[in-house]
Length: 281
Image (cartoon, rainbow, N blue to C red; front, side):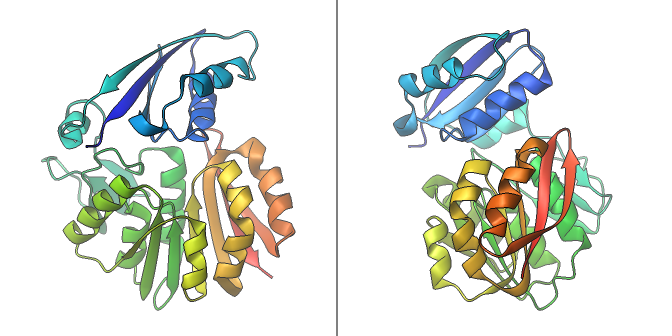
């Protein structure tokens, strides 16, 4: 059963910057989904991963000393997450006027060149978050025909699905969370694309042929730790695209990437969230 802990954090004061920083810190602790508002941040984590002491540590180390944060947690029994998203969170999104992402329950959906249907349950990656939309926009500008692409941390599979729709000859998508893999498999089948889903972490990259493109929309710490595996997984001259971190983190990632032969090409950003493209020299 996909039971979760719902953590409600109430910062004082509360603004988008504060909730973004909180979400980034909690993502490092394994929290999967976030719902920010003008008053609070709600975060979800599987029951088996929840730790009160880790929450306390995050709050103690919060880098804005003038912010007071109270929090409350509650158990959320496994349920029909699609209906929860339908009622509360997930609305159709259009990326670069070319790609629309919506759920099967939506009725008023704009027409677009690429139409992706996602019933997201609890997996991350509907396209609403800045990091996901930044990579979606990049994929719309790439020539993927005949290319092999790897998506690490695929979540719902939305990035892998768009890559397949845009002509990639083979797409491998890796996801560590078993529940997310089930969700992604349903989404791949619903969109009638060919994506090879792999349950595991970056160690699975060693089993795959070298790719022309590699995507990782995770978080700064995981990306930095797995950079050697990413570099080995792509061809010479291939491109790696990363997101899941802030503009302030770009220099840290670029420095670590340089040590494994990846050179920064460019940076795109939205609301302080960043995406970088790097080439394997």
